[in-house]
Amino acid sequence: MKKITLGALTLLLITTACRDDSYTLSTESTPNLVTPALHTRVSDSQSPLTGIVEAYPCLQGSSIYFGNYVNNTLSVFYGFYNVQDGNIVGDNNREVSLPVGKYNIVYWGTPKYEEPIHTTPAIDEPGLSIGSDLSKLYFGLRQYNKDTTYIPVYDLVHTNKEVNIGQEDLEANMERVVAGLKVIVKTKNNAVINSNITDMQVLIGGIAEKINLYTAEPENKTKTVKFDLVRSVDNTEMSNAMVMVFPSAPNPLLTLLITLKDGSVHTLSKNLESTLVANTRLTVNIVIGDIFAGGSSGNFTIDNWNESSETIEFPVVD
Image 1 (tube, rainbow, N blue to C red):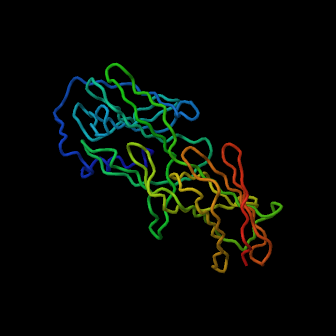
Image 2: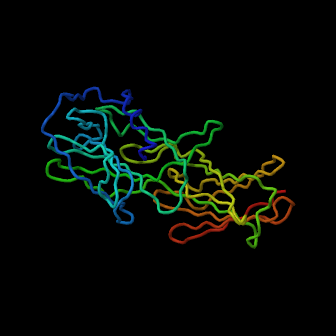
Image 3: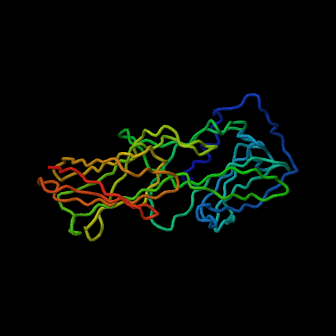
């Protein structure tokens, strides 16, 4: 949801999205507008948010998109803010400007992460028009061009809140609606990773295909997200920066694809006992034995934010 990835200009030119045809608004200039301040927090930690925030004004008590006034003219352009410690910063913002009255504001944001995260997340965005019903629109996974798997998504937070423009600022305690996943592969006794291994990829199945723009509820938990593991400098492990995914079905299937120099691909798969739910972060530690010479099996231990863990045994892979 960051500025460079949302494709705001493209999005705002698309006006063919789902629309309530019985709803009409005047697009004439309106001089009596109020531009409220914005204050945001991430509710799981109760800390001020730093990152990007979008604000979609809807009619009071509904999911019908009202629009936003830009240069005193009603437009499809939603509010867009750079935020630091919960408050607006910088000059590259498109603030919410509305006539006095009550509105339902739908907030989406992308917090800035302190630790490294996946560098190329992506989502598919819906078309948007004045009068669109946001409850019928979705943010969706974006598919890789070369296969049927999908790209990890952004770290996304969301909330809806009524506001009385003219009397109240925009304030929102936002909740994370995605799960984080990190995979670390090591050998027994922390030995050097076999030089015969050229690549490792992780597939995580049972991931929701989309989340609702209005409610943030995930739907169709049938898709598979793929990401690469990178070899460490000391060559003792392969891992990924934290990736974000939409929530999963119970016990999603995790698959490790190991590619050798001869081009052969070895596969290790197990259903996790854990489920990837919103606002959880899961670390999967995979220990591989001598799996290419008919040796002992591997195993991986799963630790989430509250320190719980599980161990799953891999079969021997010749």
